[in-house]
Image (cartoon, rainbow, N blue to C red; front, top):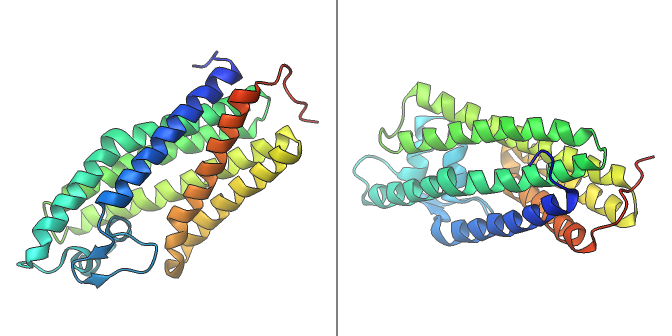
Length: 237
């Protein structure tokens, strides 16, 4: 992988990107959009509310109080989603972003290397977050230690992935050209939206929206780059 050509990396990024969004479609069809205690804000799923739970009250808002007949169904849904996330989605989107950033790095965009480091950190935090969620569903409403681990994992994941997306956007801008600049701006905008959703609790839907925007841009960029396969590497001057 380290010595792969840019075109091969773009082809891999395109294929892995399609697989990433296939997982995304699966999540939209299998993750509840309401909690056991009622409707969630528009754009927030039960899984998203679970990821951002910080207190036992937040947990009961998702899973309901002890004895609630909804709890068992919600636990099963969350465990299924988190198992797919841990063993399928995380490796797939991680490989997708890694191939895209590596391909950008081949053109001399050093900022892409920063993005790769951020991606590795983000994946580690995502594994922590998802593994903690699988633990929490079996000890509801959760211990202070587990909820702290969940907070560290979720905040670290979203922050690191936003940084990785920002680096990808800056690398696209560095390649130049109208299409590259437009893609870079859109990718960086997605990173900014994700960061804003992280710091502003009232804007939580922007977490998913920001990631989706950046990743769609990178996927389209990868598909075009794989097809066009320019003969010469573009100047970064």
